[in-house]
Image (cartoon, rainbow, N blue to C red; front, side, top):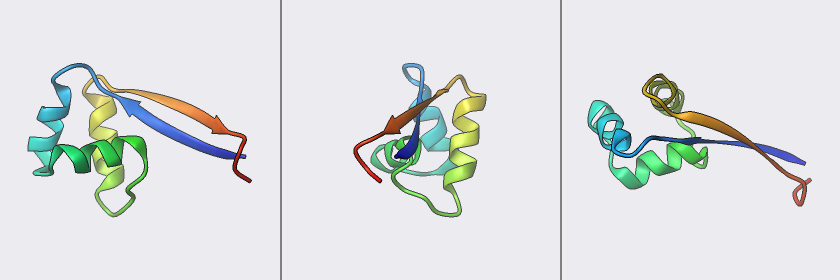
Amino acid sequence: MEILSEIKMPHGANRKIGKLFDISQPTLRKYLRGTLKDSLSNKVRKAAIENGGKEYVILDETKK
Protein backbone atom coordinates (compact mmCIF):
# COMPACT_ATOMS: atom_id res chain seq x y z
CA MET A 1 0.00 0.00 0.00
CA GLU A 2 1.35 3.40 -0.97
CA ILE A 3 0.35 6.68 0.67
CA LEU A 4 0.18 9.69 -1.63
CA SER A 5 -0.70 13.27 -0.81
CA GLU A 6 -1.93 15.91 -3.20
CA ILE A 7 -2.52 19.60 -2.56
CA LYS A 8 -5.55 21.27 -4.16
CA MET A 9 -5.40 25.04 -4.55
CA PRO A 10 -8.18 27.64 -4.80
CA HIS A 11 -8.77 29.08 -8.25
CA GLY A 12 -6.02 31.55 -9.18
CA ALA A 13 -3.69 30.71 -6.30
CA ASN A 14 -1.48 28.50 -8.48
CA ARG A 15 -0.29 31.50 -10.48
CA LYS A 16 0.72 33.32 -7.28
CA ILE A 17 2.78 30.36 -6.04
CA GLY A 18 4.34 29.87 -9.49
CA LYS A 19 5.47 33.50 -9.63
CA LEU A 20 6.73 33.40 -6.05
CA PHE A 21 9.11 30.52 -6.84
CA ASP A 22 9.63 31.37 -10.54
CA ILE A 23 8.41 27.96 -11.76
CA SER A 24 6.12 26.98 -14.62
CA GLN A 25 2.54 25.79 -14.10
CA PRO A 26 3.31 22.20 -15.24
CA THR A 27 6.19 22.02 -12.73
CA LEU A 28 3.97 23.47 -10.00
CA ARG A 29 1.31 20.82 -10.68
CA LYS A 30 3.94 18.08 -10.32
CA TYR A 31 5.05 19.52 -6.98
CA LEU A 32 1.47 19.74 -5.72
CA ARG A 33 0.71 16.17 -6.81
CA GLY A 34 3.90 14.95 -5.15
CA THR A 35 5.26 13.40 -8.35
CA LEU A 36 8.31 15.69 -8.49
CA LYS A 37 10.51 15.79 -5.41
CA ASP A 38 13.63 17.89 -5.11
CA SER A 39 15.08 20.57 -2.83
CA LEU A 40 12.30 23.05 -3.72
CA SER A 41 9.30 20.73 -3.43
CA ASN A 42 8.81 21.02 0.35
CA LYS A 43 9.00 24.82 0.19
CA VAL A 44 6.45 24.97 -2.63
CA ARG A 45 4.05 22.59 -0.88
CA LYS A 46 4.33 24.52 2.41
CA ALA A 47 3.64 27.84 0.65
CA ALA A 48 0.66 26.29 -1.13
CA ILE A 49 -0.91 25.18 2.15
CA GLU A 50 -0.22 28.60 3.71
CA ASN A 51 -2.02 30.23 0.76
CA GLY A 52 -5.24 28.27 1.08
CA GLY A 53 -4.30 24.89 -0.34
CA LYS A 54 -5.80 21.73 1.12
CA GLU A 55 -3.80 18.53 1.42
CA TYR A 56 -5.57 15.29 0.54
CA VAL A 57 -4.11 11.93 1.50
CA ILE A 58 -4.73 9.08 -0.91
CA LEU A 59 -4.16 5.41 -0.12
CA ASP A 60 -3.23 3.39 -3.18
CA GLU A 61 -3.87 -0.25 -2.32
CA THR A 62 -2.95 -1.51 -5.79
CA LYS A 63 0.77 -0.85 -5.20
CA LYS A 64 2.83 -2.74 -2.67
